Amino acid sequence: MKKRVRNVMLSALFLTGSLMMTEQASAAKVGPEEWTEYRMNSENNPVYNSSFDEEIQDVIETNNQIRSTPVIVGNNAYIGNHESGDLYSYNLVEGTMNWEAKAPNWVHSEMIYAEDNLFVGFGNRYFKNETTRGTEESGVLSLDAETGETRWKFETDGEVMPTPAFHDGTVYIVAGDRHLYAVDAESGEEEWNLELGHVMSMSSPTIEDGMLYVGGGTPSPYTFTAVDLEKEEISWQTEFPEAYAGLDDVPPVIYEDSVITTALEGEEDDNPTHMIYAMNTDNGEMKWKDSLGQGEMVKNNKSGAPMIYEDQVFVASPITKSYYAYNAADGEQNWKYDANVSKAPPVAEDGTVYFTDKEGFVYAFDTETYELLGSKELGGVLAPSGPVLMNGNLIVGSQDSNVYALPTSDVRGSSDASFFWTSPLGITLFAATALLAVVLLFILRKRTARKDPRRVGK
Image (cartoon, rainbow, N blue to C red):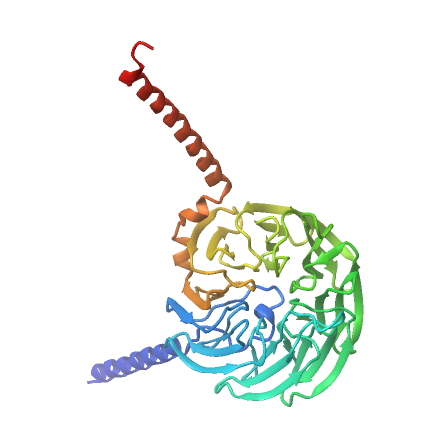
């Protein structure tokens, strides 16, 4: 009898444990609980893992181009459209749209998430006058994350195409009117503002240890700025007299005591030189810099954004059409790979880095051997703000108006021929094959001519 009672108790305990494990598994979410700045962190490497173990294979259709990174919080993806300003909340697990809303102008900003609210910038690239970039309405919206209803709107004179940053109850906004604004996240009221003296195009600010870092453009010389948020003042500014594009487009990254960014140097009418720089976070002094090389100018987003992973800086260059890995500490170039035009920061996890490009491809490389592990075609011009990795699922927006979600194993396990033929080996083999075909055709025509009866006696 005692043995039977003990067995019943053990069975009950086992069942209770199983139910608890099932509840915990079902409670696991695709993404994190908050997303407070561009690409989730100061390394520009948005990776999240929990006990969620489902593979997500989905194509989310929207009304217009997607140029910003989809923000993933819980099971929801938050997406903004380029020209139409449409905003979406989409449940990745259920595959259904939660709500749709609309911003007054273009949306290139991510819809960052903090304290159950969303914050998204809006504005366009056109210059209102010589000192202000952005026509029509510009500013930031705060939305209720559950319903999509507008909580408040903060208006600026210039565009807010860079992603705002949330820190300690305040939303920090850099704008095309050369200002940094600090706005109370709850009320939408301005706390303070600071004139930075340079137009901010797409350089989303990075916040680390109470300091905000951002790259600025016109007027020349282009200037990089560090702001002490507690003191509400500029800590230092570093001028780039040779730079004429890109510095104001690139969201910087932080590695230990270095802030790293890129820009274009040279003459505007000639092939620009794509540069990468590392500055000391304390004083802005240059620690190292290097040239990625020269190439043809491209439209928009002219300078690739960097990403930090395991002591390396990974960056794509739209100018040289190549991918790179640098030693983050001393600036030594570890790797270069010829590819297609790419402007987006990559994402990396478990020894694999994933790059995307404007031809619609995503590629996986080993971060130590730099071996190409796989490539897969998705569609359209993939967003210049890059992909994210959530529990083994890669999620990326595209200018074909879709967001693509797929397991990373689908990328590593694929081999796309069209990418192979753009690689150095593919180009060499193509040239060799073409030459062989010409030779064989010449031999065949010569033999045919010898057998031609009309040539007898000649």
